[in-house]
Length: 165
Ligand code: AR6
Image (cartoon, rainbow, N blue to C red; front, side, top):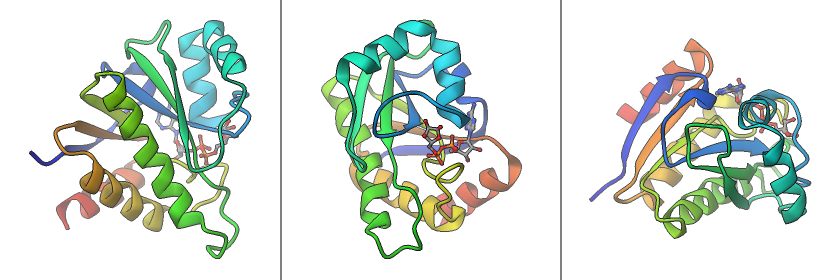
């Protein structure tokens, strides 16, 4: 069964899914953007859990409980900082998505919501990041319900175009 994929305009912190993914840094130290919003909504236990894990290499992910979120788990995915495209960024971004899907399966989950990893503070070009997000989830998301939580209408339009392609 292929992945069921949809894009929606949403604050990812509000979604009722088995796991929400946050766009984390390699220290799992919390920060701004979607990571800041998820940490605020989940409560301070989330940062404490991240400290126990200690960190995560770029291109991978780690899982914690969701604490005060409706989501059962938070998956902390570390995307690359955009450095022009010649530093393995595409493989690292795909790795962040692939690793998140693997952790969801290991946790027995079936539904996941992703933000547009790396496309904010980390500066990854949005159209290319969208292609990688959709193609990686299409390839590795068999049987899963994948939601792409878009924070603005322009991002939603990019995802809808890519999902229809
Ligand atoms: N729901 C859904 N999407 C959101 C939300 C939200 N509540 N808030 C922001 N976005 P960014 P990055 C979108 O910068 O580029 C942090 O400090 C936002 O519009 O959050 O991977 C981490 O700790 C953008 O499209 O993540 C890292 O240090 C997307 O989420 C660093 O930022 C990702 O933007 C990671 O940077």
